[in-house]
Amino acid sequence: MNSEVRNTRRVTTLRRNTDTAGNRRAERLEARISREQKDLFLRAAELQGRSLTDFVVASAQEAAIETVRTHDAMRLSERDRQTFVSALLASPAPAKTLVRAAKRYREQTGR
Image (cartoon, rainbow, N blue to C red; front, side, top):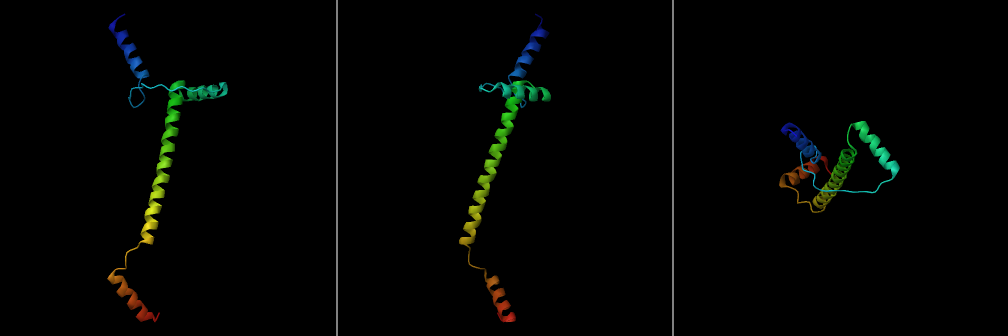
């Protein structure tokens, strides 16, 4: 076997063992699925021009990213809500300028 063929095989093997970001794929993931699910996944993978493995991994990764993003957004919203309520419940005393403005307003309007 000449060196060009050997190098081509090596590059092909390296491509198969890395994801689209160039990260090495070293972990395995297995799942039992129904025939209908496999047929659906195969059809979708073919429509996207991907292998079944690439399709399943990419789809799972997209779902995981969206799940984590949604969870983090809800957690951030909860933290922001708590901060807002705390600020309302423990509001500082009004500034002197605000007190003077309120006094002037009462004097001018008679309220």
